[in-house]
Amino acid sequence: MKLQQLRYLVAVADAGLNVTAAAQLLHTSQPGISKQLRLLEDELGLKLFVRKSRALVRTTPAGEKVIARARVVLREVANIRGLAAEIRRDEEGALSIATTHTQARYVLPDVLTRFRQKYPGIRVHLHQGTSDQIAEIIEREKIDFVVATGVNALFDKLIRIPVFRWRRGIVVPKGHPLAATPKPSFAQLGHYPIITYAFSFSGTSSLLEQFANAGVIPNIALTAWDSDVLKEYIRSGFGIGILADISIKEEDDDLKLIDASHLFPPHTTWVGFHRGALLRSYMYEFIHLLAPHLTKRQVQFAERSESQETLDKSIADASIPFRRL
Image (cartoon, rainbow, N blue to C red; front, top):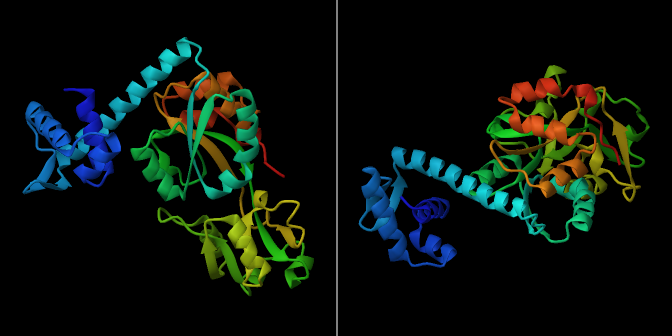
């Protein structure tokens, strides 16, 4: 069995079983990939794909398991290369981050600017998406860190370190009737069309749960992934917004952010990485810039934690700061 065969196997899976597309991506020939996949099947004594003529139709159950293990092997190979670079004190490399639109727009710019000042030789690759999209990305891409909020069931294979908390706020144009209401109720919110973030396809929306607990059915008029887009619709009078308070900046002086801490519990943003990942010195620095209250010893404890439950118990909610602009 060769590493090249495993790379071909994973590339074909990621290309939707399109061998030609995988060959183009890997700068090799389609017959060469097909031959190596056949040799791998012969060596394992397993059929990894269902074929129709020469085309791959679908992955067999055995193939799914082998592909999952191949991803782990290739990740460890990348770790070994990273270890060699670390031993050489190599300050060149790459940092790949998968994150949501809100974190990419309002949290990471300052963090990555300071990171760049300290490590100008490190290339940063930013992958934006919804939580569901990020969960798919980390299955097929080499991602060093995920920065996201909630939806823990999607990321149960990652070590997740809480870095800060934030709250939802009610956002209205200045002059709106709610702007003069210091603590609006769910019943009052129910009178207006609501603009908020698109809901994850996985699990139940905590926003809808809070309304349901109050016995109110919200009128969700518009959802989107991007806070800047949502704010434009709030300005247009399309509805009232329920957004992350960290998304309202000084330049949004035509909007009013109303405290909603009496309605919605806080959310925790975390940084996650694969169990067994090799964290290089510049990766520790990224975590430090994102969460300066965490010591390197705490991060190393997280690396060694046998379970997420053990890690969560070691970091009390009281020690997780609220992030404000």
